[in-house]
Image (cartoon, rainbow, N blue to C red; front, side, top):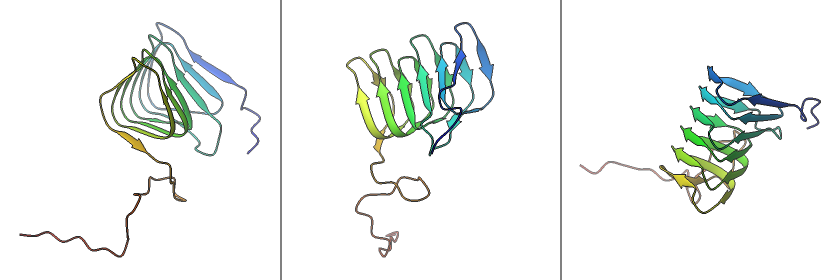
Length: 137
């Protein structure tokens, strides 16, 4: 998908605090603090970069993510996820392709979403929809 705003970059500078949800296209660089969810269209090539000293308190749903700061919330990356050496994630990490450097920390689960269905929700590998689960009391 061609996007005219694909080359635009938004910077949330050091010592800047944003409260509220953000939805963007193009590139977003966070050097300051964001208290809210951050999302971008899953069919875009949007990229979020959280630099050393940057903080996000909320859920991230962006195709391409680079973290070298702090994230308190779940991360959903449908494209590429890079956890750099100073990354600290407190939440579950959902990824299609991950690169994790020595020193990066994740306090949560790493969930591979290699197979995605049409709704962009993770599909359980080896799950048979004909199976019935019953509670044994």
